Length: 362
Image 1 (cartoon, rainbow, N blue to C red):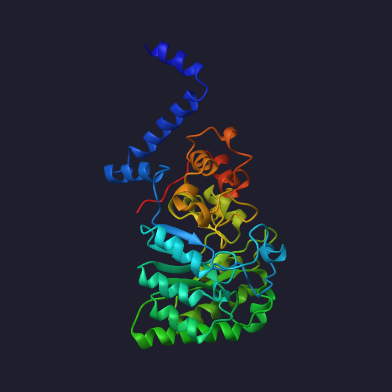
Image 2 (spheres, rainbow, N blue to C red):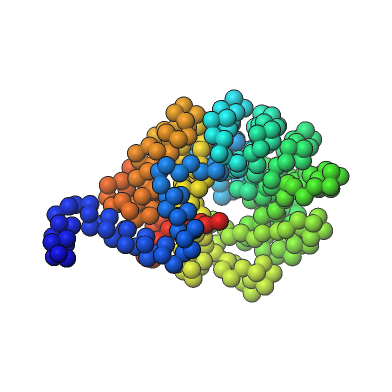
């Protein structure tokens, strides 16, 4: 009987890789509690509709950051623009299961002239908004600051790579350190005046050659303002830290470059977070094009969410095949080359080290 089954499997082109994928998935899921196991299978199904989304509020940005290839290359394939209130309303109304939306990605959300009514509408519909991918917070009006409080904005990461104006502008070209700190303080003051805990504010500090010695000062400033500080690794592959022991002691980081992190952990700096987006919080461009994850900026999946609807977009052929490839359920040669996942660094590192995608479980 076993011999007959093996002969049959050998004759069917897709049977062998599918059998291996099912076997591998079972080995991974069998150790999980029953509830989590069922959740894993449901969330990887093309019929699953995510309760969270990532929608770019604005690709516009007035800064010329030294390491930003997106603005330097004229917004790449995503174009310059912002999310309209009309499209946001349609997206929220058509998808009542969505309860959280991340608005930030490549641009600065506060340059969207319709941001305040967007926040108001989301609040009315019970949708929590956030900007954890980052804002630079150089230009924000009093109306926007108060709207963040009044409409229950969940939180944001503010990118401040230095503890003085002279250091800050070496990377954030065109920015103003004093303005950013003042805006953060005003927001915190409004929040305390209302007696609220949201929005949460996190100071993100990218460690670079020129700002290594201001780490301690930044920690002290963050503590004084009552906000946490998170140290991040530079994108620059040529960066070599000068004060290694000092930085590791003060930041708590065990790796100071992305290359070092990958060598130690055998995974990319962002781990499986980016790939999880395709399943749990798909990225949508400001004009509705489905991007899948937050790192893709040179194309899209060939469907527009605002035109065909979220359900149809997420069930489009290339998108479903790409998700199957990430889970090793679909032979990669059937889709790679057409899929954005083909050139993804996170996927390549994971595949090189023989790891499967670790789908986030709550």
